Length: 188
Length: 122
Image: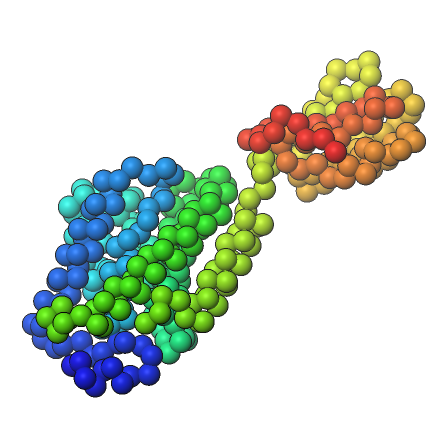
């Protein structure tokens, strides 16, 4: 799994293992993402809706290494199990979280389709962060608070998303690097 | 893998442009105004709702100032003053903005909704 993959042009993606191994991979990364998700939920936030979104790091890392399918599983499980653990399942928070994650995954899929050969972790992360935030604002505005003031918040929130997207993208790039360089044991 | 590839920079620049556009499109300082309050010498200030278009003539010290309401904005269309500062102030649409024709004694202030500033002057 290691030798052939390093000769791939630029994306460090490799075929995910099949069967139970794939499940274990997904479960492991989902658990990591959930842990980050919960840690972040405990952090106070200066503005409602602004979170660093560090769980995104996991999604991007998994996307770069094992492809979109595994990343979608990890992100989906994170939203579902994370909300169950935090206690927001099926609440507005959950709906926002789920729609944001779905939009981010869609953006990642598009980004990979359009520019997968050239894009690195930061590019993916920024795409995902903006799609996530943009969708959340729209959903919040459409479903929960149909007041123009919500849209006025959008520039603030999108700016935050851009900044945090870049930050978590750089973190993801470093993590991918370490995974690439690390011992075989760190890969599975 | 380097943390930033050229394509990542392209994405970041595009994203920054998008965010900038969102500022331009959605951030308008004070909230949209809902009414215009027109004061003229010797009269009780009158309010015009910005929701319905209208052209009114307000009698001032020198003569009639023409004030136009259109599409949620209001402006001095004409005033019998010398400098026409009031006309050059243009459209008022954000809560808190003021245009005044001092020679004629006519003041238009828009209000309602959320205000960012107590007043905006030029």
